[in-house]
Image (cartoon, rainbow, N blue to C red; front, side, top):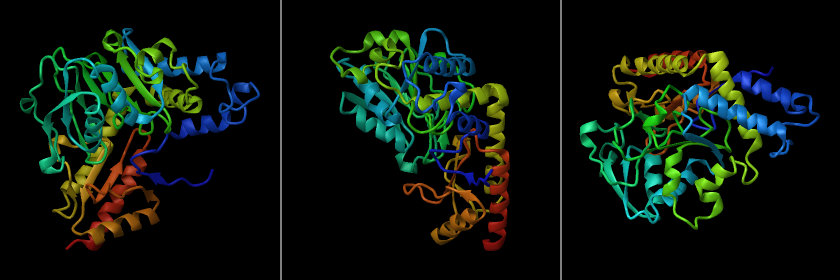
Length: 365
């Protein structure tokens, strides 16, 4: 096997090696059927078994109750920004509450405003989204159509430690960046959606977990593909789904279930990886400066600055030479970002830690 580097990109991101190896085996001849997994018909019994296994794995890992639907979409989380508002805000006569903790929440708000009234109940813009709000700072409207939050902001590197309490108002969350990274109580949410390309699979498929009673709130005359009821009725097969991407979700969730041992164990690994990097930042005497406040730090996306932009550029260049790729921070925050999703091995984080110590030793005052 050719040597692989450590990919710290925010997404598409590192995939589990066992899943990649299984896909390589199935690429030419899936399970002995004589054709590639890329070629199978989406209405065949072969694919029916694949999508059912993916759903069963997700239901097992997250302990998803029977009254929640698990659906597969295309269009990424960006399409869900619009779909959520079209299905549950349009024509409702209500407003929707949004918690704004970073760039992706801001994009969700822009799309929702096209469908109805949006109330931003908290906005972290003043501090360039370096923290999440305290519960006391959130005042939800009791008759809101829903509350929307982004539990983990990929760009800023802030993360909720627990979901906000929205009472009887459905909580809708874009979990693209922390989906399957730790256990959650699904019943605290009305809708969970997540682009797969961080923790669940390759780019091209979006996962939606939706509480069934919310389907009764959807207005009539929505475009068929933008109506959640269509996908529920069609079992995610109304149109041709992203067959290969769903197959890969099945492989990744199988890896989480069988080789990692579940989300409780995955969470311990993720917390340890994040602590390794935050410890270097906190002990660097200001050479590395974390963007997120300690109480709001993400276990998925570690963001920090160096004393100058020139040093940041040199850090990224030198890191790439050492096989540590994808570390350049987003332009809105700058600096460095290490995305350490589920499939990033501990060895990769340890290699980055050693490089950080070395770089500070060579360039610190």
